[in-house]
Length: 129
Image (tube, rainbow, N blue to C red; front, side):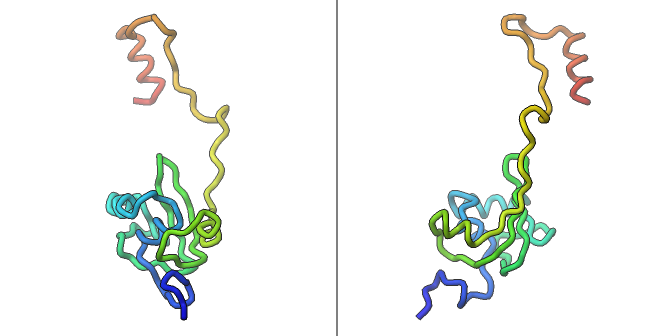
């Protein structure tokens, strides 16, 4: 008899359950909230939490300003250990930029006080505002 978490008996799983089961979010309610906020896309379309996920689907999740791109390999209903979760997903997320290439934010020297009006305008012009 197959266990309820085996992918052989399942044809689809709720999106929020699968995201939680593969350890993208710590709780299922966080996964549901991310879907409601529009941070989760399924095959390029904005997805609801109850939408069905099938093997081969592409899931994009926006976390901390960056997209994680995941391909569904196996369906999971229950949260599993990290090795089993890694086996159920193909991660196509590009590597983050090295620190040297990331945009450098201008910083003021400690103890120089608040910026003057001219300095503030220069900072805003530099930031593109």
